[in-house]
Length: 94
Image 1 (cartoon, rainbow, N blue to C red):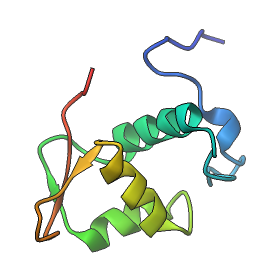
Image 2: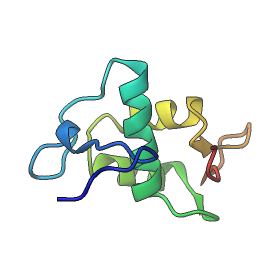
Image 3: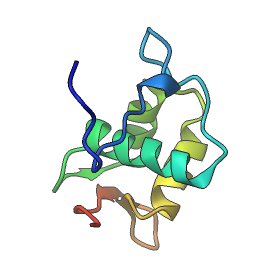
Image 4: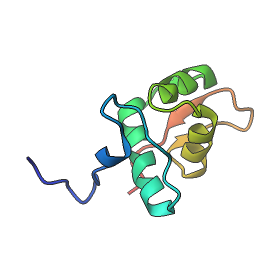
């Protein structure tokens, strides 16, 4: 087993064996780790997504796609124009 790098904390405990998210963490730091993981695994850099596409991607891991989408936008992982017409992965924020 390999060690988890500090840049990518292990979030595997947040997921059931079937790959579904057990719960969205309440603690901000742990939720940020989850959001970083979801942004990096569900979305491609340089691509625009419709709201339906974002929801479909998020529903692969959790039923409350609107909440996860909102968290991703508020945390700065996904950007959208004021008209909400599309979403785009924000380049690495480090």
